[in-house]
Image (cartoon, rainbow, N blue to C red):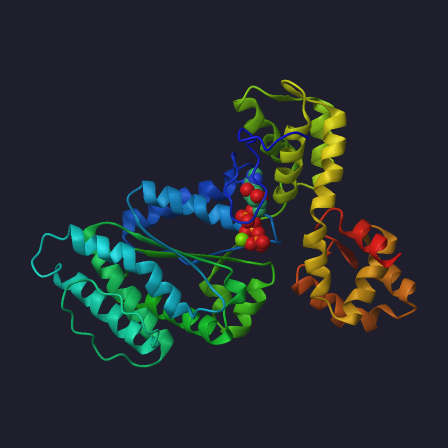
Length: 393
Ligand SMILES: Nc1ncnc2c1ncn2[C@@H]1O[C@H](COP(=O)(O)OP(=O)(O)OP(=O)(O)O)[C@@H](O)[C@H]1O
Ligand SMILES: [Mg+2]
């Protein structure tokens, strides 16, 4: 396999931008429309939530949206929800640099105009309420106003003030929140409430929020607020179709003068199920195995095996989070293959299908299995079923 090769273009990993972001044209086009509307109306639209299974490419999609907004001159902030930090803590940390830059740019005396000073005030008050020890200073005196103490209301005040400043500056704001499904229930409630209130203000502001999380996120959001389904706009992203998967493999190599044989592409696409993480992983191995300027079918075949072997840690991590009952279900499904009817799984376990409803729902919520048409389930990760069978043997 040779030495590490710095020219290898493939990027298996978490949140690592791929050399070519394949198959996301439709959602990127929607985003262009969204940003055009926000710009034209100076009003943030319904917040987006991008959902999808693990490794499907949510984080890198958010990064692409941020890049595009940044290139268009927007103020951008990017946070990840979930422990150890609270939403307010992450949000203020992410806003600190853009706000400092705004203070630096501001030509008005004493650190900016009134609107900016109001943002800084609320920001500081929120930071003080967090009790994080470290102070984030702007080098300007600001008077932190009294906050309500209700996180939802306080967040809304911050976003509203930020938006009023942004509106005056003519630079919309994009806030992305990744891993939204791991936010605490209080934080989700507060976020829902703040965005709900923001949308009701008399003076609309050009603040756009885009969150991302696992496929169960819409249900989680709905549990945290009655109006959540109408508040958020949901965009599910899935595995890449065959054409996009082929592009994800071949385009990065073609840029470097390396061609994939048709049979090699077909084998890699088929084995990956279009899951971007596996495409990157297979691509990376195939690149190492190639001789000269061509990736052959045999290279792809070996690369697939290496990619699955390499994913063992991922499979194990997934397995270890399961309860005993969930493992029984997963083992039974794995014995049947990558996909089966729930009735078959039940028969395999000597149970009645109705008795498996709960286990199945939990597994779907965790993204370990997904529904595949009426009464059927399947594994979303290629190679997982085979690994489970081998493990149980
Ligand atoms: N559209 C795409 N085309 C090609 N490769 C992609 C695409 N989307 C993601 N990838 C690659 O897939 C891998 C996983 O991407 P990413 O970390 O964004 O997934 P994710 O959905 O955020 O996963 P998680 O749920 O674990 O956070 C990375 O190696 C990334 O480069
Ligand atoms: Mg991610």
